[in-house]
Length: 90
Image (cartoon, rainbow, N blue to C red; front, side, top):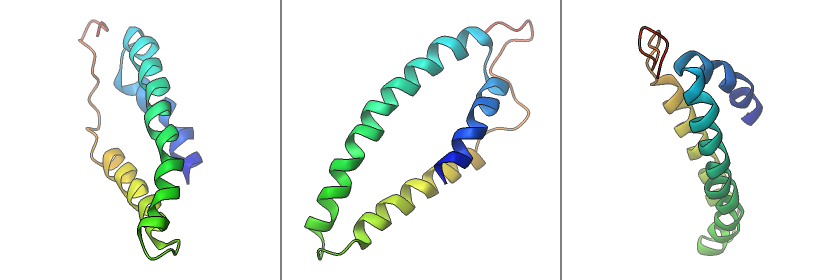
């Protein structure tokens, strides 16, 4: 599932932002989100079954909800709009 979004993400961002913004802002966001999203997820996935009934369903619910947020964010983006000025500058 992650590969579906990861593979298309580069094309999506390239269409939305000018090159200077893509090269700096997207790199920063990609690296920092790896710390907060990927770094905290194992802790959350370990804690959820312990807080619940002990079964895996709370962790499954967490994964499903993060997938739904990703689909919602991708589907809700503006189409055909670039974040650049007409002269190509951000």
